[in-house]
Length: 153
Image (cartoon, rainbow, N blue to C red; front, side, top):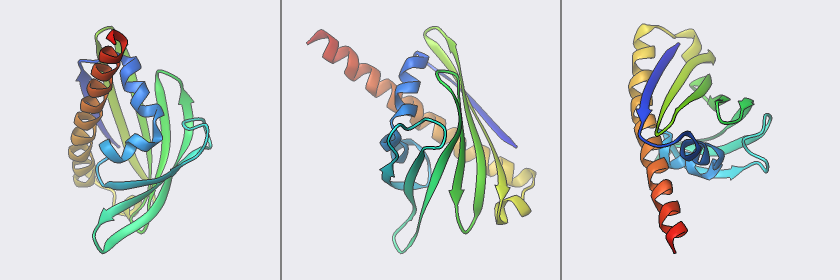
């Protein structure tokens, strides 16, 4: 399993605002090119994000299902990316006031990725998720700034 952690200079509520917005996943999840649809009630367990991965002529449509939710603390997902496989993804937030520690734990569970899983694959997942968390923080900061501006207006 690959675990990646980042301390973000935003409150946990700002991070969760992004996590609750299924259409934002295309902006911060590396590899997702388009969010095609989001089930009503997302991120309730059993709801799904429907997306396209890849670019140009090499694209695949697939989905991610919410498998668990501890609102404000943990989001569990099963991300599908066939033909590569399926991964169990857990996003954990720890509210530390002005700073939020966000961790992503990811492990392949089905398909080619699970069969070929090794420490080198974990390193690649971890490197990808460093960028995922950087983008998530940037989006949370942007939304927090926009909220502060609209609160002043």
